[in-house]
Image (cartoon, rainbow, N blue to C red; front, top):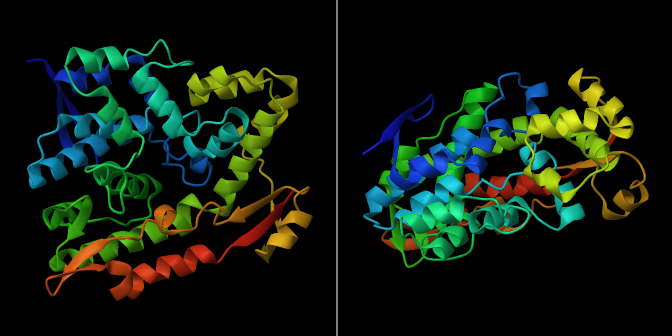
Length: 350
């Protein structure tokens, strides 16, 4: 059988064959080579030039580790893990909120459309490849887009293959120096109905993973300068003669097109030359104050969308004294994540 060996600096050698190899070689998957994982963060962390391509392969690798450990014979899970980010628009999350505002779609919606070959992705070869190998297309698209099911937690749960790759990968390329013992987490995991359960001896590894997540949010994902560059990119796109087909472009293609357009080119040049807005005031978040300031160039960190257990992902079940417990009820470390996310600030910039 034909196969390829991918040398992943994070996970070592990953063997790709069969349906995975055909999906890897498809146009929409290859496009992920040109979608940066962390959007504009390379303006702050120069090494953060890694892409959705290698992250998607890493997510598949870890999902299959879970499958092997739990003796799950459903290749659709591995395929869905590999395709879970295939719908990301240019610059990943940097423009996703704006694209949702303009086109009514988030990357999960775009992923669903690519996997099923729906406009504007009706040229996608993905559904034909999956059908050729006789896998369940609906199961794959549901798993890839986070629809709740028996195995959905492997890709989008409180501790999932997506997060166990991207936090380690982002930390590696930004130089934050943190790591997660993902193998310990996998090897102490089991299933109870549709829930992931971690054995008591795996609790320290889970707590360390939550600390790593908190550090990455504070030092990278919500870094004020990364957020400023993202805000400038949003403003440039609003000034651009945009179209829904922009969702199919790569980072380079969209930036090049905005450079050619008079109303957006100056701000894009400022981003490229790192002439960024500066924060001139920071105030504790208040809803009324936020509404008053809405005509200014502002940002809220952490974002307003970051609230609730589903978004914070702290509903993790563990076995303690042979009882199923929610980790946030017994671990102050997990509760600290709630405390951090609830402390929001308004940043004014110019």
